Length: 277
Picture 1: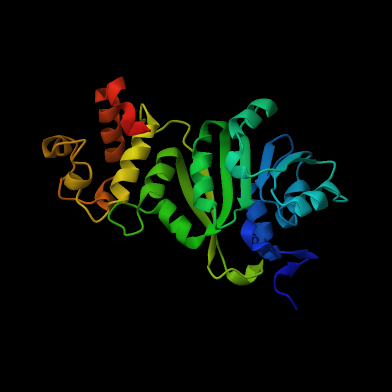
Picture 2 (picture 1 turned 60 degrees about the horizontal axis):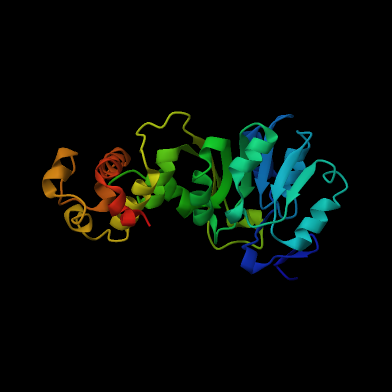
């Protein structure tokens, strides 16, 4: 039997399709989401509707984003769901979630079993719209969740950790084995809840500065901060922010990165903004 065929659909590798088939896990995820009628519920990558069907039983309307045309057709003709769904047939990476929230006049509750091949990129895309999102519940590769919650001085602490923690409170909820999917992925998974901060703890005036600084340091994570940021800060300036210049990127806290970003926002003139591009 072809292990990539599930409920009459051939799982397409280029879409990163692994279909959840464990009813205990499905019920646990839906319980964690706790969907209610009237909420702006949106699923990314509904696939064959394993989660969609259960969530749909609790709400009167919901939105889904699905790129695979075959799956869109199945959802559009689903005996129970078809009258409840608003289907966006497009790549989630280009969706403007703020526009949708504005159209429905409330913040979105986003969930999904995200394709592992684009999950990190998609998270960075979603962070842009956290002002329009109430919460997010995602099935992700365990390794990605470990990076989301990692603290300084950890080998898995990186740019994703800093940016995710800047925008959200992150709560791992549930471990999921490969056997819960068809076809089975080669990695373990974790269900995680991300709740955007209503008040940012260390607000940055220009988030592009935070993005660029963390990209610069973590792309050179073997270098000391003195060397990776030497063209932007002197050792004296780093010490003023409580940062030992001999430390590396993984040793600097989210709050300290935010201070550095704000320093650049304050000091860079318009003529020096090439750093942002």
